Length: 289
Image 1 (spheres, one colour):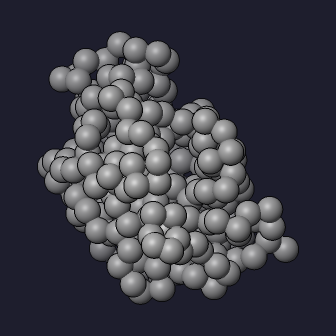
Image 2 (spheres, helix red, strand yellow):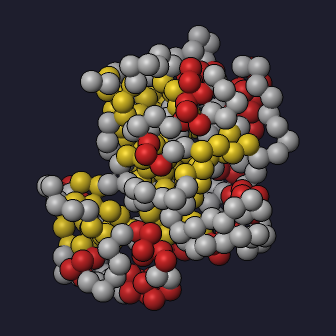
Image 3 (cartoon, one colour):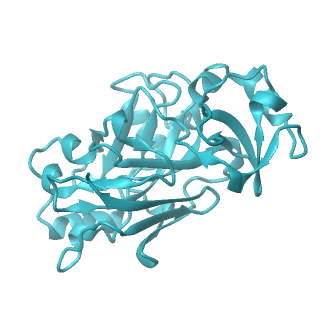
């Protein structure tokens, strides 16, 4: 069952284990567990064993509807995202005059962009081209370097739904893309962390983006050009990935900038990203105050 970060009213966020329409407060049911997701991941197998032992009837169960869900990993060391990693999205990029490189194209999303699964996304006053990107996010479970593709599954803690919100006018000003991907609130993730052991095949998950109820993106992670194992292996040739680091694995076709004419987000628009087996996130666009 997924690992959530939740709060009641204005209380401090806590860890919870999700069962259907309820969440068990782990500070009550398993008080010896670490109090945040990164510490939980660093604790390794003993923490996982204690987590697995918590059942749906444990003390501290609350209705899921009564709590606020927070981003599962609010402050990772790194939030990295890969560009043009679905075959159909690559075709869109070519139509915009962008070449799809033969190698993996990675960029940073600054971690200050991260918000919760149902928080508002702000349209910056300095941007007129706000766009969406439905993505599967990977969360790293242990420190790793020089990981082979075959060993990559062993370093992954789990998966989340993500929306790589993008200010296209800022993104296309420079080759790095970082500024256009890193505005405050432009990193919704959640609704919780689904542990890797619960996902039979992360390369066979349906993914959809709806805006105001209209399907804009619809794909499957089987369409990844560079699969998840290859992504982890590639990155660890360069850097040590650490517990809690987030990797956004790419987006299918259907982004607003590629439509004719382009269709960008406006205040009041509601984005819904759903991935089979992982749940959904829903974020309303609001104007910057």
